[in-house]
Amino acid sequence: MSRRLDDLVAFWALLGGVVLLSIVAVTAFNIGARLLDLTARPFGGSVRGFSGYEDYVRLTVSCAALMLLPYCQQRRGHVAVDLLAARMPAWLDRSMTVISLGAMALLAGFLFGWMVVGMIETRADGAVSRVLQWPEWLFYLPGLASLLLWTLVAARDACRAATGGIRS
Image (tube, helix red, strand yellow):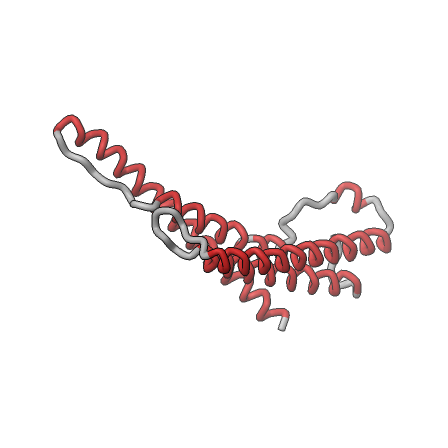
């Protein structure tokens, strides 16, 4: 189970990276189109960029950012006070690790719950993006999956730390 979770988290982060690359590509295209438009205007021409660019970036950035959090948790890529922990007794270090990982799991689970509420409200309101008219509630789904994965990784690591399998 643990190996499958690790593989799923790694795949999810790679997918988040693909989303980020798509944002970079769309942004580069729009900047290029704007430059071409500025060049073509004196000659009576025009070049259009991607209609709905702001909608696309706003909706996909929110997905991509959350998609990277489970991987950061898995790799323990968050802030830790190693200087203090290195000087503490092992039992205190392990206790702090268990508490911090447990708190992280609770926080991620709390955020998951409120994101469910937000998605339900957004769907009930019929909210759509301004230009592209995409239903906004659909973009909550990757975030929900990300928060669920984050919760699972933090909870698993808290259990491992409690049994001595992980140190700070």
